[in-house]
Length: 223
Image 1: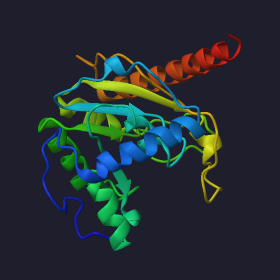
Image 2: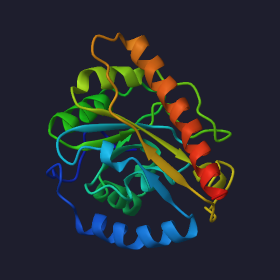
Image 3: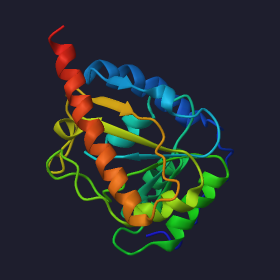
């Protein structure tokens, strides 16, 4: 386990794209788009510069990939600390702007790192459910997410993913081709809201967007 959640191999500018990030784009965009019939909606809602916090539902390990795949800038994201125990895999995901968080431990260091990166102008992905879905539906929103949202002082862009649960559910070792959709919504207005109200807003927004995304894809099937 890493000694500190602030242990980062190198400091990068908020829009600096590493060679491994470029390679990931070149490899994953055509592959996932073809195998998963990937559809992406609402990319115009994501600012191209400055700190941005994407709050998304979490269906599978594929989510960070499909959320970042068609955005024009690199994204930072949290990963559970256990994923950093293997040195090669730790190097790989750090190169893709991941940093560790100790799940269920109230990791203050990870929260501080998130807020720091956002204030430096990075785009960061947060899964406010805290862990992957058990059934593909949105689980309870962790109240700690509101702390980051409230203190970040950056646009909060809601995002929903659908289909990645069927592609890679928790009990399955490897992913399989399944249709996946991603939708970004307009930034949330949290001005004057208390933490509980922010949590409720995130919950309500993600559920509404997921229903809309499913409706849209179903409608497209019948065109």
